Image (cartoon, rainbow, N blue to C red; front, top):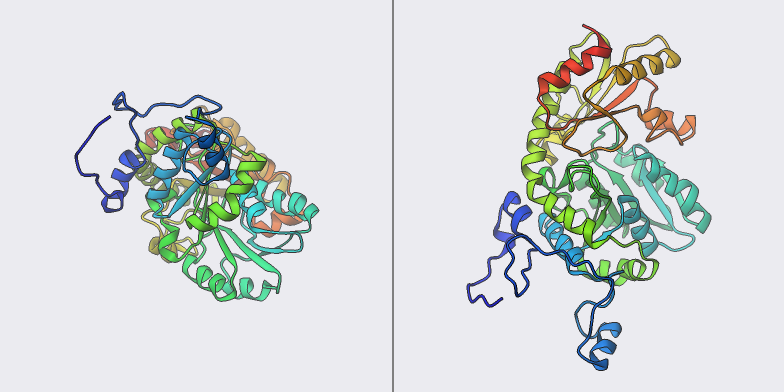
Length: 404
């Protein structure tokens, strides 16, 4: 479609505007809502163009395993939101982590990771990457001394989540970034819980950002997706070849859904975070609750750091029920979960619907008891991912199991 108007610069826009306008491309039909490109391959003008596209000497679409306009629109919008040069989308959040590791690491390399990680990420590092000669050391993520002490000559990558899943541990991204740069180590941060609506890791020097787009980027629990954001040359040279060859591809349909989900990201994250803060404060005062983990509360051990790095505390609230021992704790936690009538008992998060789960037997259930203990995952722990329901209804639902 012909349009002679000067083009706006997305870098000049606020986050809410970027989430709605960045990355949009109209076809010759002038559609307002972006088109979906459901095709496996693309047609070339001639044999010479096909050869040039396959050789990479001409920009353009080749095959939907690694080039598709719907996926590219999502990648461009997320890159703009994260203030990063480039983005590569993948089929899931775990695919994003795996693809990043495959692109940046070789056999004999060493990873340092925070102990406070999503259970599947720990499984990937311990049980999968180790089979290919990649070693992982887990450290207390809040201790820069522990990170530095764990560095070896073959350390190639730092990996962390902030806030972490499910205890909302906050890492000092600036300090971690400075340490990584000092030693020439790749620094990867999972920004799933906050998203660029609440936190920009690049502002604190982070080199590579990982997303499970399945969560808040979609926002309604509809599709799977993942993303890797970082410097263009690094992602194109190191990570794109893995994506192109191994094929952890984001489908065009899922990309379109995620792309449209981003349009409401800012308003959802702010509303869900406000509700989470109210729920967290209410839980902290409840007699059946022994501890609440929420960065927006002053009782959180890294509250000051969280408020420096994040706009709000986010939408994840975890808490422990009071109990006499671990068996009693699990029974009481399960009672709270099973008594809920409104909240969804599911391990997913980031939905407009509030979800409730027991990390010790779900998201972190495959970890060894020793690994769970090291990560602070107790049997009395419950994780809430606060949605957009009325807060009064959520409190009522929790009271069915907590009493009072």
